[in-house]
Image (cartoon, rainbow, N blue to C red; front, side):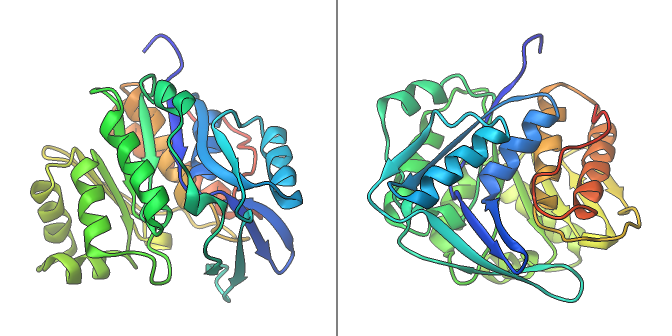
Length: 291
């Protein structure tokens, strides 16, 4: 691809309220930021409230050089998540409901832009409210035929259902999940056998191009019909793991769009996610060349 790929993160946009203070949050924003760092043109499709936290969030995104042109304003409060970290630095979330990003609506500018996208990343959390669910599914149905659709499942609290996950998988080219999410999918879809068998079953059942499975410090697996790649996670001093999975997804997406061999893409995604774990917050500047 001679031009920069154009990618979008679609869904939740919020303030993560951590014990140390407030940080920009939401997987779509983290994805867009790291995709930009790895060589893409990125946008975020979401919504903030007509309130001071919303203004401040847009300013913070502009400071990260994220394109805010497709972030709507509405009358609902800007999203917040209360985040606590356990002893391993892993985040636990209380995600407040009926907020701006639960009420993303279709508009003409967004409908036009999605036809240009080379990839779009979305999750299940952002579809917890029927308004945003309908919008996201409409966008996925109307992207170009070559657009890579990445379902980073992102199960949080009770904000998912068999119906939403099934619909999302029917749109998806790539499923990304972690070792806490696989048991939930195994229960929902009756997956049996070893981990590799379960992933393979998801790949075939939903006609996916790739399944991406992350296991924290144990490593990660990427598989398609022909290739299987496992890479162990490097040993690092973890500050927190917020945003590490999103950076992995972003680098993976950039690499696949750029036609880089899978093993090299996997190595770059692993290295980037490991670095994000050593930094506080989800959006550190990566100090090395990703590709």
